[in-house]
Image: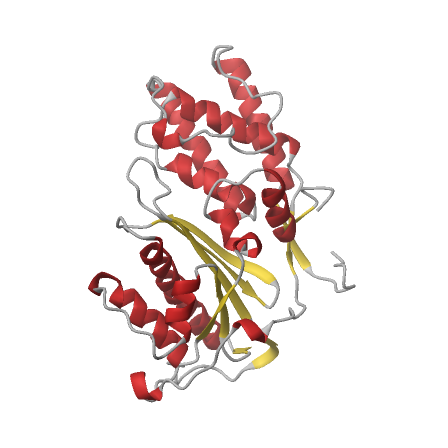
Length: 325
């Protein structure tokens, strides 16, 4: 595929898998179940507006349809692995109800398939070009006084670096108390190597955070740990990394506490995440900068989005899915 900057790159295309999956669902519904279940004629978004999976009180599915629901969640998860990040959040929410699916959950699953039927064509491009980095949002400081002479733990037996030097960016976000059933927050982040999106995660946090600050710090810590593993893999593959990783978040207090050595945090429950993130900055693994929420790619994986914002974020990651973005 040739990009807008005239660079040729590899792409991940899941359209054949999506089209065949939708066709299989339509055949199954026609031949095996009553007319109660069918794909909606139109679905502009994966979920209907204002629908909450955790608040669904419709009747429970019978064993046959419950088993079918579970099998279809597995298929949708594979679509996400093939690059359909535009349904990542919705599939994650539906997967929480695999043990006790209800009729409303199956209706929503069919709504997702109706959306895929009309938005089947999407390409995830592995763009090898270097992005423009605005260094004004980052702040480099002297950390030795606080954490000593820390350095990144590069494996001593790592092979000699070769081929192209790559840079890494990560966008992180959380949806504070987003689950209305348990009030747990969701951690989301997207990792880019050069300009290629290579990893994306959407996961419910294991504990209930009482503040937005705490939920954002937990998400940043999870992103840092994943980033450390990725950097280790690249070193062991002989891939040369271009300096530090650029870490973007849209919560200013968290960014300030991670950027500035002099900041202090007295709340004990958040100090583990606080120091884990600051140590990554001290050893030059990551530089943390602020980004506006409407430009944060991870927002697509954090909460249900509709309208122009959803189209903009999806259009920045996937080609051909929206004609006007």
